[in-house]
Length: 172
Image 1 (cartoon, rainbow, N blue to C red):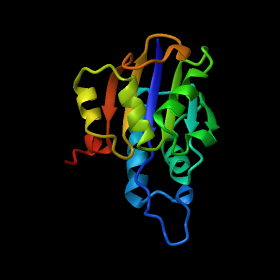
Image 2 (image 1 turned 30 degrees about the vertical axis):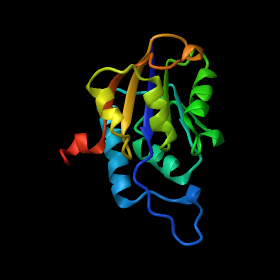
Image 3 (image 1 turned 90 degrees about the vertical axis):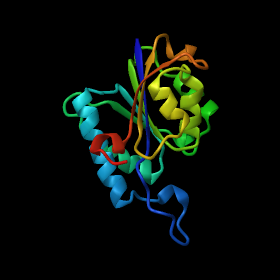
Image 4 (image 1 turned 180 degrees about the vertical axis):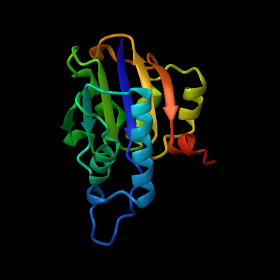
């Protein structure tokens, strides 16, 4: 059994005049949410073998703030094609993952990450019902992947966990 984790980047600052989208930093709330998600991932024992991260500043800052790994550090790859990638591009990237890689964390953007999750997830359960409503910033998804990465297909993965910063601190 393999594990796939999706993490949408945390809340970013709005673009400033003359600033390109890719260089937007995290907002203070985003920094707090990313740190809280990192603590939750540690508590849950979610340790990926491989982290695929978009080159955007907000995704790289999210990774820095969730990074709790001590001795068993995952391999981190910055993947240019993840910047604002659509669902088919994300699936193609995952299908190319080495079969020896047991767990992958993808840190990316909406709408592609949300669309990809909807495409991959089996259409059942509370987590799926929540996913249908959207994928907020700093939300974490955990999927069980029953077969090789190359066999990823529509509606085959069990969405095991849907966790948001609001779930962690009781916000409504």
